[in-house]
Image 1 (cartoon, rainbow, N blue to C red):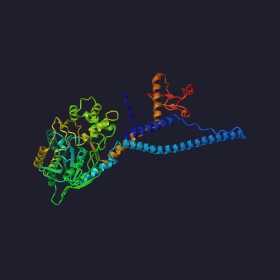
Image 2: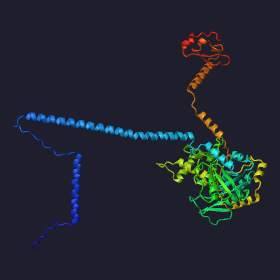
Image 3: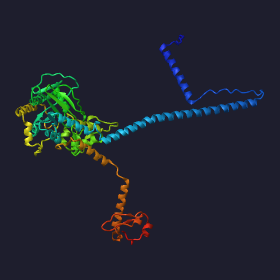
Image 4: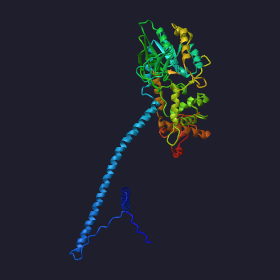
Length: 550
């Protein structure tokens, strides 16, 4: 049987397949062209030859060769000119770019020098002006409130400020235990009993300020003032009642001055009583720089001022915690080192939930890892960790407490204490304090860090004392005269030669002859023996030791 003839397949295809093939062809051609460009292959140009029968063929070829050489020389000269222009432009741009960088480096160097000279100050106002403002607050006030940090009350007391207030027989002085919610209640009651023996003391807790101009009041516990959404001021009513009792009459008001070291809550106290954000507050030291008067009501006007200036004669921990200067750079690490030395190690470990550490640097490394403070490459940022601890310690966040001293360290006599208590209802004051302590939400002793207080802090109120201190620092920083150092070295070498020579050194009289004064470098007498130094050995050989000195 004959096999049937098969039909040929059709060459028709779908459009998508055809387009795909065309695209692949285009891509292939493009790739070939690219490779040809990279290899540098070009079609050879056809050389236009001169026929042999042409007249003057050699002359024409010579002229063509000369024209070709001139063209090449011209191209080379143009290329050199372009390179010179580019180099000039680059030099000009480099000088322009270098000049602002130099200016920036000079500015940064000047800033660093000024920071070093000023001791890394947080503000530009000198200390003498701060002393003047504090003195104005004391002089203009009828009643002075010294605000203390309840975590370290004796360390935040200033003896000089209290003495300055008590020099005026008509002024009253009270102590305000602020941040009282950060210490255990038992510790707070001990401090209240200790301080009341000298000066009348009130327990107070400022409200956490909300950045609002006007704050709404709402119903709160008796003895408390609510000044923001959910934040309560404890002890406010008791303080206002006490100040109203001191007013001479309903029509005559009093001025109340607020003093204390930086970061104890002076401005926050006024904001809490006024129930409006009127005074600038902040975690940075030295936020308040000038005197400011605020009317609480028709009878009471409060005067806010800058913090007290800490004397440099205090211990290092006191200057770190109470000073007006913000710690920067190495100062932060030093401050943390001091704090850890005066704190209970186990409680610090529990507070920050870290393992045992051998030194402050290891503690900061563990804290940086715990809080995720890492630099590039996973290196722990110890400086940021130190700032975190310092801000927690100085601010109103971390709970720590110190114990009252066992020995009596009172510097106010009984007569002065009696004068301060005149006209006060002590029973009502004690009841208000107990009510405030009861209403507070305080941490337990186990969750609070035990801190060893450095004791009373010395402050500076006299501007002349600061001027003398600055002059003394300037004298200490003056460079020594190099000529005097050379003379001292020469004297020391001569004395050593005398000791080595012993009895061999010649005995000479007190003063040399006037003719020999310029040639001889004489040393003051030592044990009756005069020693003579020479610049050259020849002078020493020719010198007459039997010469008489007048």
